[in-house]
Image (cartoon, rainbow, N blue to C red; front, side, top):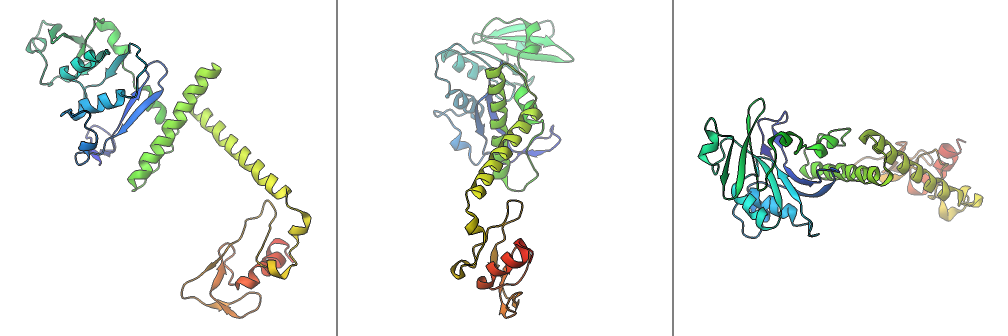
Length: 296
């Protein structure tokens, strides 16, 4: 499922296609690209082109009937796709690669800055190099440089939670969590009318989670009666209640190891995972209440 992208610093990457709002940068829809072997799962309405299927599948989540202008980069662009979007009622603008097959031959010649093909206007914009873009409506070439800005990916690169891992599903999961956090930040900025940085928003989330968790833990321990904190009942030898700042110890079974118990000095294969002491299950509670939590 990995793609080889020679222009990127990390050559081997997963490809996720995004549909974002150009004003708020909110992520509406995303589609994970499973590669050539999984292309059958991407094909939309028996469309033979994978690029066209991806665009149409991403747009299928928008059913509000509003007029929208769709911008997409050169990987998806084709005059056939632009005609399909026109029939669906979308205005659309795209950047064409110089070696695109369905471009009119006139636009590649010197002295020609625009040409029509199948009701699509192809224009040439001169920056550091000649850039070709097409649209199904009239648009000024001077406004093109401000049209397509991939801001959502810029947000994802700030304080990302992505980590190096060999598990592909972890990459996708972490990306989804990162995207959800950015969407939440955008919603909060719109709702409260205050712009916060990605770092500040993530810090607020962390503080809120820790504050909520701390309250839950403190409430649980405060509700425990004082009588239960002192373990004297023989039937509850393995029941241990430490203080809030102390770790909860657990007993586990070891494989092919047998040593003497720290309390009764008989051999056992059970050990405490926290303090690494060999103890019988019946000696576990008494030992920890006397020598660990109460520090007898």
